[in-house]
Image (cartoon, rainbow, N blue to C red; front, side, top):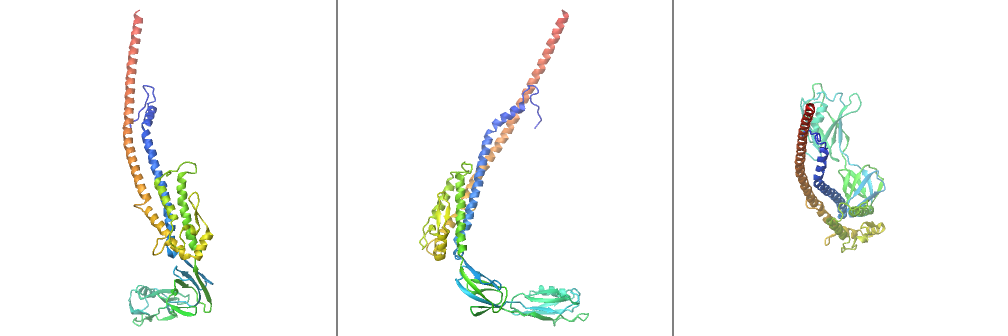
Length: 453
């Protein structure tokens, strides 16, 4: 835009006049910008509501799981020898466990050598044979006939054996060590197919430093063996991980219902539900006493009414309603939990609690109904927030297009005003010049007249 200096001829502050005129012209744009801000604020608020619903869904999904509702816990008299992890299908009971031996893999080591990288061995083949596998022949040639080369060749042979080189700190410190990759599985190493080296190095011979062995435990007087140190079938539904063998040391294992875990699931649901209710309440009246951006939103209120309806659903089981778990609705719509009532239900009628929440073959549980509804309204494509967001973003785009068109029109309008004021300045300047010329001419005539007299 060209630089203009307004008011040189007229004395008017034309820039200020144009600014005021354009401010009046921009009032419709300011209204559109307020509308745009309103829609964006609603999108942001609805996104927060969506987050609350999603958090509630994540909590209700656990109440919809019979496995989570029937969680078990394992208590050991000592965790020095093993740990126990029960699944929901583990029966309640007490067991006595003795760890007699841990499973271990075979380890074998060679004699010591002074140099691990020197090509000192002959060439030919090495043969490794696992306890349950076919012999694997490993080619040793001039490119890998060092101790390091042999270890690398074994590791690349996929023979079920891992090779490494250790330094034992002696005058001939480097030793080849082979370890079976599977517990309780032995292997054999045959270097007879390898010739002697140029310097008289005979093929490496290995001696066993650790025998392969199965794990051995005794559960309630029954001997149980396993190829690894994690046993999943010694006690139904319980995974035992052995850490130390101590023959004669008896460990008492108790498997019981994890009542605290079940109660925590219900508490989490109550907290998530109250978060949703509190958010909706905050939209009715903010902390400043003003209506929230979603105040009066029918969709929001419909969601809340649906959740409240689900909460009061009755089912045909020994525990037929959420109120029997100790849940009560307060005046503001939030829930309070009577923990003693919940604990009594969990302790004395866990199957009834499970049927109420997760359902059974003949009836859908309350948690399942909550889950199904929440999954539908939080759907990324067809959910409550997704649909509202699409509509409001469409409105925002429409407003942006209108603002852009109006800005272009106002830019032209401002240029027109400047041109008009510039024309006025030029006209006034021209008139001032004519006036000055005529004044000068009149003055000359006056002086001439005076001189002739």
